[in-house]
Length: 295
Image (cartoon, rainbow, N blue to C red; front, top):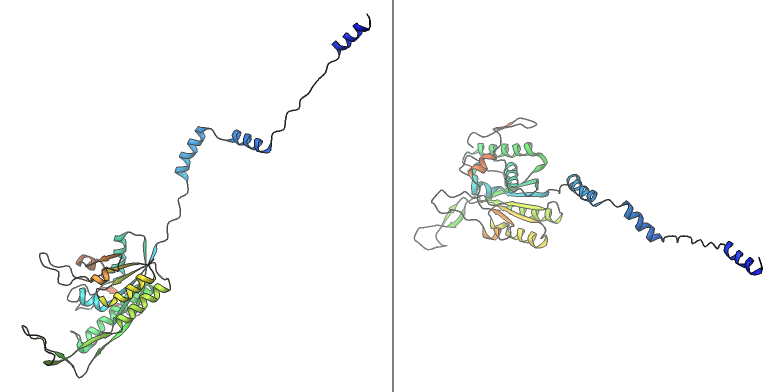
């Protein structure tokens, strides 16, 4: 075999091997591939969603709104309790019942009661009236502790009598025709109530406040709170007796107070007052307090 055949032989016996190494995947491609491999199937995703809806932790309950209450004791007594069998009223229980009926996630923090000590000289039962009122206040404080605060004003009167124009039916007002009368006036209650409401609002003690009164003298204080602290919700409970069936309203609700309130209760029924009576005997750290016989 010649040179030419030897060259062909070398061509047929030489093998050229080309090895192509696989290209290394980029980091992003590798991550995407791993994610696809680990991704659950549509069935697992569907089932996990069902289980998740059933077993997902519930959000924590919302904090109840803190409520502070301010009661004009004079207005409550003469507007609704006088002449009724409901004088042995537990105002904390009354407001608690109102908040439960509202069902607005509210917590009664404190009831501020503003009043003045009775004077035996002008009371229907003399000294017994003073003792009955003092026992009632002691019962409230013993029963509710820090949830009940009392602020006292005082009664003022002219010991020589006050000259006031005489009312004569069918005749016009005549300031020269006057008579001397005993004129009893409660002092400081309105001012004490107004200042305490505003100070508590300024200090951020409560999220909501409730005024128990139908006295329009409280309007300036409510207006100031409404303007300066608009986030505080205002409620007004008016101690008014519902009119008998078929008869006109004897005492109307104060429109000036209602206009500043988020919500109002314009009457307190006998059923509401009856449900909020103190027990006949209230234990205290000393002697128990019993409901006065003439109440």
